[in-house]
Length: 366
Image (cartoon, rainbow, N blue to C red; front, side):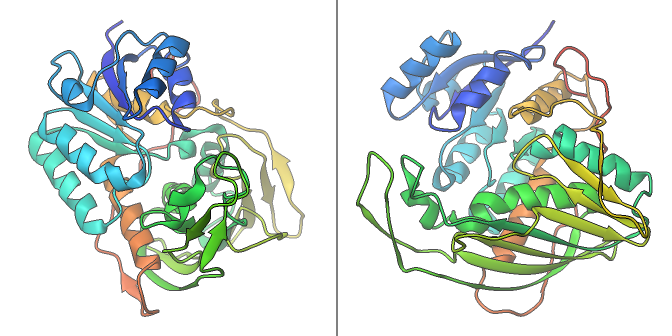
């Protein structure tokens, strides 16, 4: 079976699940051709663990005719530069979220990709998992009627107590909205369609954070971003959804996400995961769990890369984690973290991507 050769840039914390899945369950359309990292030891370790045949520099990857696509797993501040270099070198690109850290940079990347006839994709791909796809099926079947509203909450107290290198979560390009917002917003756009306008307020609980994880225990980090972000989103379909992302909450009892319609309500599972549970409530009844209708309920990061590869090979016509959705999500995040509280009217309006089929063909995602 023909495959797309992918060069992976960045062998850090998130790369392990990508390597495992792209050399395993998604090997039907993808071959990890080479890997690269600024810390060579990381690339060597990844190559040895996952059987990756080559270690290259980024420049070597961009000049390699055998590599058709670049998977960018670097930190957010590097996304724009590496994505642009790869596109200008004629490579398809799939990037970890976010697409870039400014809407203007993201729009430039999308323009370059379209001009060159290349595919540009971006995480998250969790919305392609069993949980969100089951919710999508229920909404499309009219189980909650016409969507009217909803609530979404990502509330925690930050990453400094467990992450080995948490400082960048409090720098430009991160914070709770840019770090976790992509999961929630991408799921909402898939379930409800595009956003038309946004009102927002935000704040910051602490000016500094003290790392209590190893190996940087005791280091103090200056907080440069808003760490409690509240948005009110009106969707083109008419639904109005409240979303809060926060690194300032010690404890809470709020759901990850609920959507409300004229004929019922649906409890959406954590959009940072691929599975369930999914719960549905009809008029006059409480929530009842619904069996998952789709596959990929485990951690299936890389499914978006496999879908992109299938599109490049002509085996799929619907690239779901595409640049238009990624740019729309980036615009929404930039709107919600901007100064002021006036209503922002969205410039982008992506097409709502098709739901996934229930059955898949040997790791090739259609």
